[in-house]
Amino acid sequence: MGARSMTEEVADRRKDKRFRLPEGSIVAFKPGYIKLGRITDIGTGGLGFTYIHGQELPKVSSEVDIFVAIRDFYLYNVPFETIWDFETEATRFSSLKTKRSGLQFRQLTQAQISGLEYFIENHTAGEIQG
Image 1 (cartoon, one colour):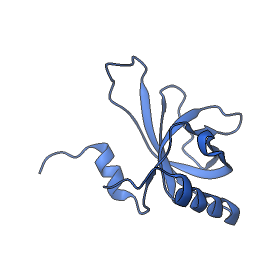
Image 2 (tube, one colour):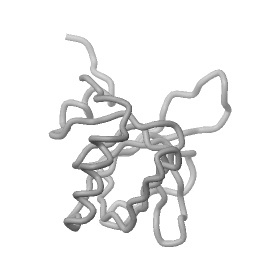
Image 3 (cartoon, one colour):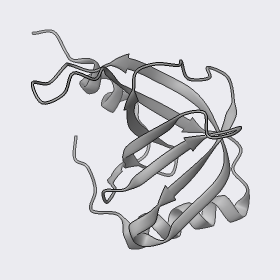
Image 4 (cartoon, helix red, strand yellow):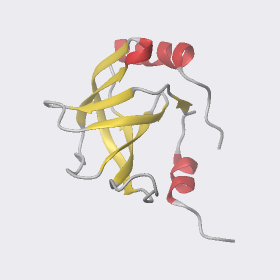
């Protein structure tokens, strides 16, 4: 059996279905939006995103805001914990170093849960298989 990639290992640990998001989906770290990332997938339990390598992400529970401009969706003060964070492979199209990270949501309010479920049901671009 061959070696597995970090992406395959992460996908195996997920409990919730994940869904693709439209372009322009952003996660912003609080306070003061110290880091922004492009959301790649989302589920009821968390999200995955990419960002330009630089300042490290918080390891302990903190809050983020989630923006999806094209769908006019905004979910604020979402508590999270960083579950994984690794550097991505360089591409021939960019000299910027990027990282991919996964956040697990923590203790969402009922309003946040309802907003997230509504958004997933009505505005995502389809379930990610595998």
